Image (cartoon, rainbow, N blue to C red; front, side, top):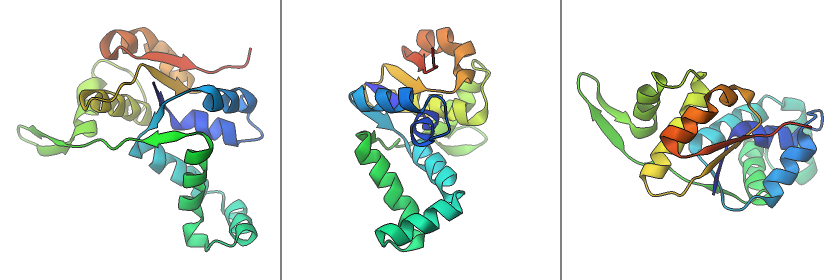
Length: 167
């Protein structure tokens, strides 16, 4: 059971990425893949910046331009059999009030993992989903920034980091 980082989806879709074939094969063969709302938002942001491609595609498949990004996300989710899992809940934090659970987890994890914000948020979503009862044993990514924290992630979250690289 894997949590899929946005980077591997983007690599699988990008014909210029040297890891495209490996990312595509991994996403197609891996079972029970989970994504979070963070993955959806990142993917939407990346797709929305490809304006000429979106315009061309919306005409080709006859979908209104304002709907093309959600349509593409649904297509990607079906193509790779990605299962969206929502993180629920809020944590009451003294002096701050209520924080959305993944954001509180990111704040807690930030002192132990030296990662960029989006990478830290992916770990926070993984931890939150596990706390909600989701089975996640692996993080699939092409983002090599996770490599430096690989052992600590395994120790603290019991999640193996699998970073795809061309051999």
